[in-house]
Length: 392
Ligand code: SAM
Ligand code: SF4
Ligand code: SF4
Image 1 (cartoon, rainbow, N blue to C red):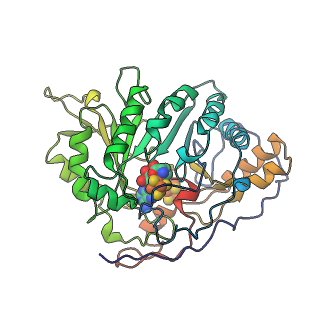
Image 2: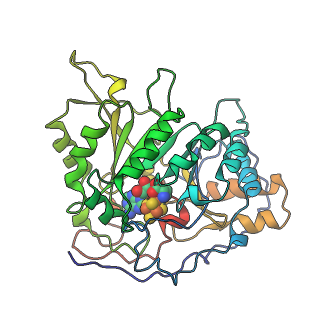
Image 3: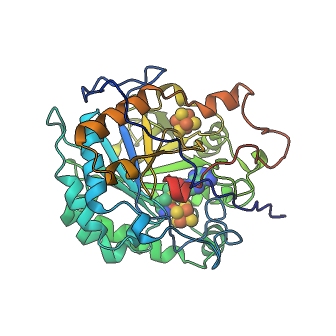
């Protein structure tokens, strides 16, 4: 298969000027964007670096030894992340997800988790604090993460077969070591729920047709019965470097058809509005859904737009606020933080930015208003920031 890698156009430096709005917006929990969507989920990228070179995310040809990562002074400090997170929570955010790049590469990440675990929600409901990792440092870190107050964790794994996984991660990383990381997470109780199942331990598999789709069933056979959630993600056209093509996307409905031939599935209701995954449970021998068997989820980012309920914002490694995974501009909250702005000023700025949010990229694409998709062409019409920087 020929590779289509597109040189990186650095969009990290472009951000709309952020001036403090005249009329203050207070944190009422009632904040809505232009499509009446609340702000509930904040994804925070804590580093733009990674020890993997997944072709769909950080292809080697672009993220090579010449690539300029952000200097440490440009990253938000833990104190800055914690302060911003509290202000977002005051606005109604209920879920914080640390991501990257590889978040466990950020030194002393558990110190940040301990700070975030202290955040109070306005209605005293518990904050959902989670992290997405490639699992490579999990054996080393699982205990510290749990001690620091992490509730849940998502581990990415794209195949059971070593040769296929190595093609996906492109750094020769073996499956066995990720499985050891997952085991360590289980050993310390990360993601264990009140019933003793690991419903808060999720496994993410990005499916690329023709590269790892033959691994769907082996992955399911491995994780079936372990009480975890295995989620299949359609390969997305994020960023501008992965040479994405529609023909490499395996639509979720096709995946469910394939899985349904071997497993007895039943669709589950969503936990909350804005949930990205469509969930399915497994039936036991008595025909009942059994959580002990785990569940699967499909994330149909390409074939089924879910913008209508999208309540997610993203904070980039250097403190820019992005309102959509496919946005090409972020709002510079770091400069605001470092200009000695008060909490009220920053709260108001966040309120104004969200209040004017109009993003619905996937819907527009589905309506034929997005970039070219279906003609085997490389999508490079819009210069977008990379997922490793904006956070997945
Ligand atoms: N390094 C961590 C990891 O891989 O889990 C966290 C960051 S990664 C950007 C977050 C998630 O985004 C991973 O589950 C990854 O598989 C997914 N991802 C990255 N690029 C993607 C793409 N082009 N399409 C779909 N999912 C993608
Ligand atoms: Fe790294 Fe995660 Fe991107 Fe893979 S998906 S290159 S592990 S940041
Ligand atoms: Fe949300 Fe943008 Fe994805 Fe739509 S395309 S679901 S607005 S992140």
